[in-house]
Length: 199
Image 1: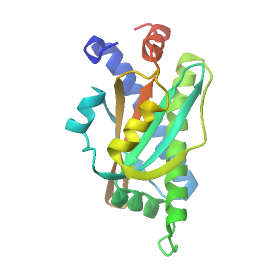
Image 2 (image 1 turned 90 degrees about the horizontal axis):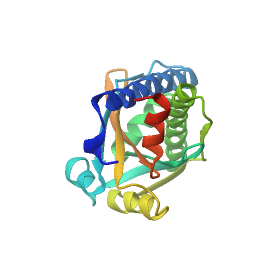
Image 3 (image 1 turned 60 degrees about the horizontal axis):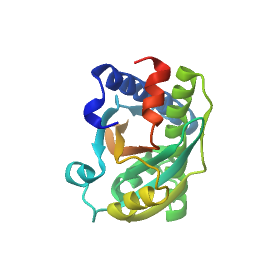
């Protein structure tokens, strides 16, 4: 399915799923850290592989990325990406102000945050479709964005050329943190999803 083939109703369904998942994620993170962390209504774009570097982020930009596999009755990869600066801001949101942070703790906190976000999206989708979906253990890495995204494709040659990008904005105590969650579905996953929903 090419992005031009998505109907307005299908895109609305994806946006609503992202909205529900994002709200659940913000609530879960707030409960975990004991702070009110808000998450703006996520925006969704569906882009071809080459368009990502033109519209979203250059290949040579250094990023922190967390990857998780979607498993169960549908398969794909989630890839959470943010800059080093935004990763540190996310960690500050999650840890006490006087907490002494090191790289290991930073990576652990970001991985846990992404695990919560992805699980929230999968739970929303599972409830809507009455299917079983779960994620793998998160894996975090720091590298050039181009290398990380390329690896996500090479890892499984069955993946589509199109990528669903969910833009997230976390807010805490006046600070805003931008991040992107990339979903790379296996062929037929989105078509089957829409078929089950009836749109």
